[in-house]
Structures are given as C-alpha cells and as structure tokens.
Length: 154
Ligand SMILES: CC(C)(COP(=O)(O)OP(=O)(O)OC[C@H]1O[C@@H](n2cnc3c(N)ncnc32)[C@H](O)[C@@H]1OP(=O)(O)O)[C@@H](O)C(=O)NCCC(=O)NCCS
Image (cartoon, rainbow, N blue to C red; front, side, top):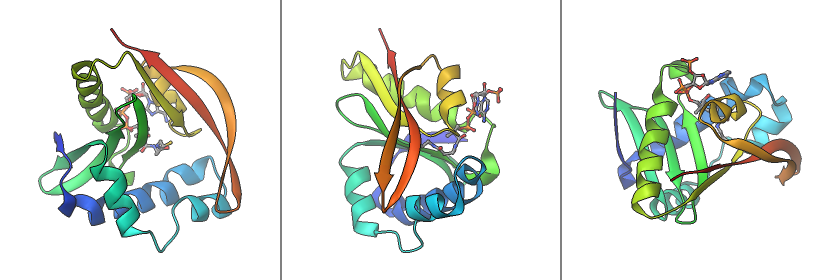
C-alpha cells in the first residue's frame, strides 16, 4: 500500500469507495434512510471534484486500486476520511492520517479537527483526538449524530 496525493482522475473511484463504505460500513451505526441521504446513488461528480481539488487530499492505493482517502482543509479540518469497505482495520486510515498530520505540521497548523461519525470515533480516539461535543447535523432531510473532535499537534 502507498499513500500519494490526489489527482483529478481519481474522483470516480473515490466516489465509488465513498458510496460502498457508507452503505456497507457506516450502516452498522446509521439506518438505511440516513445512509441513503449521506451517500445518494446519484452523487454529484463536480461537487466532489471541487471539494477534493480545493483541499489537501491523500489517496491510499494497493496496486492501482484506491483503498482509502482523506482530505485536510487549510484551517486544520479533516473534511472526508474513508477507507474501502474490504480494507477496514488494515492500517489504511492510520497511513492516510499520518500524511495529513505531516502536511498539517508543514503548514504550521496547530489543531486538527473533524466531525467524526459514530463509526469513525474509536479510530480518532485511538489517534489521540478528543471529543469536544456531540452534534446533530442535518443532511438531505435526515438528522445524524456525529462528534466534533480535535487534536493539538506540536
Ligand atoms: C475511520 C476509518 C477510515 C479508519 O480506517 P481503518 O483503515 O479501518 O483504520 P486503521 O486500520 O488504521 O485503524 C487503526 C486503529 O484505530 C482503532 N480503530 C479503528 N477502527 C476501529 C473500530 N471500529 N473500533 C475500535 N477501534 C478502531 C484501532 O485501534 C485500530 O488499530 P488495530 O486495528 O490495530 O486495533 C474506517 O473505519 C472507515 O472507513 N470508517 C467508515 C467511514 C467513516 O465513518 N469515516 C468518517 C467520516 S465522518
């Protein structure tokens, strides 16, 4: 496995990964209506292209298959963080986060933050993030519980 920076031709594989992970992994913690709203079947390609190209996006790949991705905003916020449904708990998320933290240090960022799903919370706890607050967010008519988490880096 290696981690590299995102390129525009990755977007379709990333969207597919995102859809698969939400529907097969996050479904453990959210109901069908919620995952359908989170990752709808007709995902907007242009929205994702803009979102990923305007941030520091890292992609993990095994051979030529994308098995995870995550992105960092220049304010230290981790916006997206997903590992492929068939590659969970194999260290992929750890490697992506390591790259994000390195980038954040390079940018002089002191605090990382994320809105972690119920599913991702144990991962971020393991990486020394702390829960600042539990929040309810609304997306496409569904209400989701997630956790605003942060980690100070030096
Ligand atoms: C969060 C996520 C990206 C983590 O990726 P991953 O590649 O599975 O994580 P790693 O294998 O690097 O895990 C590292 C450590 O985190 C902890 N961890 C990860 N997932 C965990 C879980 N479900 N329960 C408890 N601990 C967990 C463990 O300590 C793990 O080490 P171990 O496997 O040696 O015990 C992945 O679980 C995922 O895709 N989740 C669904 C998508 C999601 O909700 N993303 C956040 C969007 S808000």
